[in-house]
Image (cartoon, rainbow, N blue to C red; front, side, top):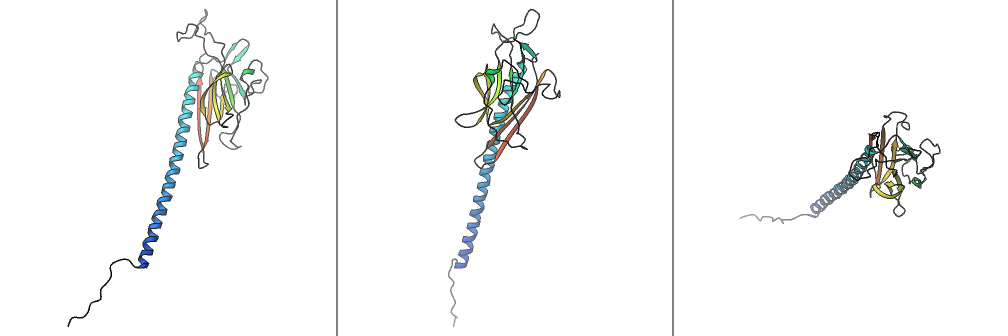
Length: 234
């Protein structure tokens, strides 16, 4: 006589279901954490890429201007390039009163940097001249003595804070007006000639240092810094 066999029921017990559910929750949590981290990396990369692109565009624009600019030269009793700090064009970088540059005065830009930050310090802005080209042939005018003729139009680079958005903008201006934005998110700009640099750069050169700063949606601070020493035209 055959003995009776005990049948088993296929499926999960409550304990097994609980274990499986726990494992799935752990996996889901890990995926969420990984996605959050990936989002953070994407935001960081995007912000830094934008800063770099903006900084490189502004620097190429500035360098091209300096390479065409005058320096040092005296025209109509004023010496160029003229360097001044924090929007006060009534005096030069050494706080010596200088007349004739008032159209370039503007309110100082807002600063987010704190003492100890690499981008902390005053803005040092610049007024400069370009060669004259009266016949618009693309070539600088030359006087009878073979010297460059300088156009009296004054160009400048200044940092200002937007009234509507509170962001800092680097502007290129003509005679203190007609601003053209070179970059946004500018924390600081510093132009130096030989004297203001302590004669660490050549007499016929300008050093420019550009500092950009951006805070992303995670409240992380991103910075871009660039520097170049550029020889002037004369």
